[in-house]
Image (tube, rainbow, N blue to C red; front, side, top):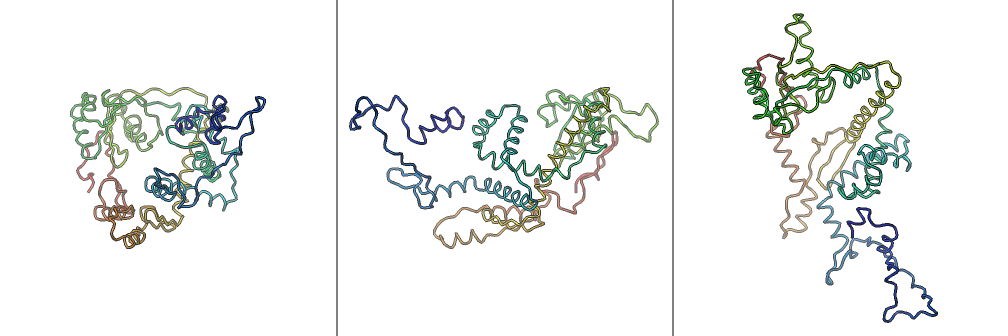
Length: 419
């Protein structure tokens, strides 16, 4: 029955039957012991006794064969299973509430409504089906979505908007990205610089075998079966920016100081290893360069559309930064994880305290208590200190930058390898 409610397949009358205990018309017939009807008229029903959800910790939330399951037991189980995720959401909401209160910003119900409509439009479906999908796939009620997703979205938008501007350079880059030339490439992706060097040497020895090498060695599951051919061409200034910049610099622009036209990049040329992130390196081979579109870059309507698109993209990035700044400046005591984060500290710098765990152990010494989240976090931090180069650990502040990328056609040096 709960699935029917979440899927929205029960109308208001049906829900009223379930909640208020009203019987369907066909079921409201006289039964043994029921009051007699006079002249065919139904006798008035006794008043309904509405029950509230138990609120006190010791109140029974369910009774199974006489055994009581208390609200506190249910709450403890919910915290154990989903507490960390829900608490993170509450912490975020609290930070946003404090920020808009400090700045005198308000969020109205109409604005939340518009935000839900906007989110549904982004998903490509209407509002009703959007909310039903959330209930079915993410177990989020409309109220929860409005309170913990739509409301923060509106609030962060208002906090971020004053600092977002669209510049002439933004417009020029956007026009180039949308309407400029596109680079069609094959790609080989590996997970380390050492492997990238090895692949680069293989490609250098046999440029015509790039597609075969991609099929055999590339970690990109979408392009590897196609010989590394990417389904979408690369635009200038597309994200990740360091990847598109390197691809265009090595496969389109070439060395600006080299005036020999025979040295200009051409189809079949390949790049040096390009770092995407800490665990991904790519090598591109140019298939062809698609010419750009001829558009009027002074068209007011086109400029308006481009400006709105750029503004929204920059706003989304700024909203993330605002949330990160709020958390950075906040002092947060998380007693569920045992972490204490001081204002100005990154989350990774938060101290881990075990007083809560020790108190439980002292009060119940006869019970075997599993390791707490705080203990697990403490072990993780200690392990990171013992092995700062371990996988998944962010590069510490002040640590050397990743090795520089070799230019197109340049042999990578062993000294470029991470120490």
